[in-house]
Amino acid sequence: MRVLVTGAMGMLGREVVQTMEMHGHEVWGTDVASSEEHLDITRPDQIRYAISSFRPEWIVNCAAYTNVDAAEDHEEEALLLNAKGPEILSRVCRKAKVKLAHISTDYVFDGTKDTPYGEDDPPCPINVYGASKLAGENAIRHQMSDYLIIRTQWLIGLHGRNFVSTILTAAQVRQTLSVVNDQWGAPTFAPDLAKAVAALVEMDARGVFHVCNRGKATWYDLACKAVELVGLSTRIVPVSTAEYPRPAKRPPYSLLSTKKFTEKTGKLMPLWQTSLETHIRGYLQHAKGSA
Ligand SMILES: NC(=O)c1ccc[n+]([C@@H]2O[C@H](COP(=O)([O-])OP(=O)(O)OC[C@H]3O[C@@H](n4cnc5c(N)ncnc54)[C@H](OP(=O)(O)O)[C@@H]3O)[C@@H](O)[C@H]2O)c1
Image (cartoon, rainbow, N blue to C red; front, side):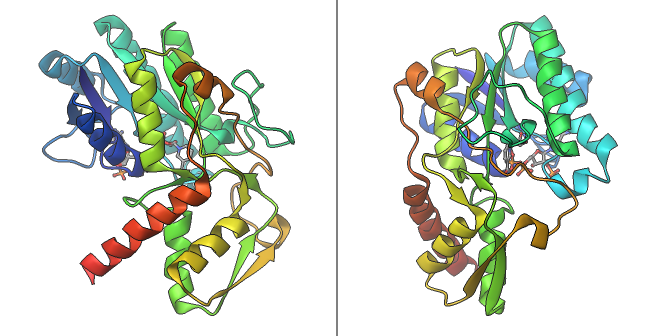
């Protein structure tokens, strides 16, 4: 099938393009940052033109404003990309009869539960980014009845700044790093998520699905494991959220239940520890290549 990917130069977008191509689909990766494959999701004229020239069956929207802390001071920009963009995309898609798969986040929840969040749990964002992503979900629901929304969390990939790359960069120059040990989630690897997105699209799934890697961790657990796998001797010190204040509040617990995804696709997401090992091998190869 023909699949148009927006935000295709981002961490997830690149993996979605690659996975869809590997699955034999005809894929057009577009991004606001690309001059040749330019598509801005806030521009209905550009979306309409892309649809009429490529005639995709699906659009997979990986474009977003993803800087959680910066969003606190840039609410307008976050809302434009995370709420207005999906609204425009879904309106144009509905009229052109194109199916839309949209990526959302665990940060639509407040993190007060202590068991994994299901798709029907009531959202209650506690930061601007989460509120803007929830507004995007709601805009899509308002525009279309047959949307596909995939919520994920703690995304890690080779093509973009993320927690693991930040920790490994810092660990090379510092002897000690303080890392938060009272926020729980599941580190989720962009190649695994891309395969899950492809599976749902290929099955013509509709509705909301939670997708993250299996297992749970704190940021401290993830930092320790990443530093150990790279073979660095940096000391990782566990600290509380209160000891490490950030501009945006984070949910203390935001694990997502992938039960619905597994029931629909028959697939189990890989354990985060296994995918971290694969990621680190790629990270080291990448580092060697660019040295
Ligand atoms: N990263 C995480 O930890 C995480 C967690 C949960 C959910 N998610 C969700 O997963 C999805 C993918 O995240 P990601 O980390 O891969 O994002 P990312 O690396 O920031 O990539 C987003 C891409 O979209 C592009 N973009 C920005 N504005 C655009 C516009 N108006 N039109 C078209 N493209 C535009 C960006 O370009 P510029 O770089 O030039 O702005 C970037 O290439 C997002 O929906 C995000 O909310 C991410």
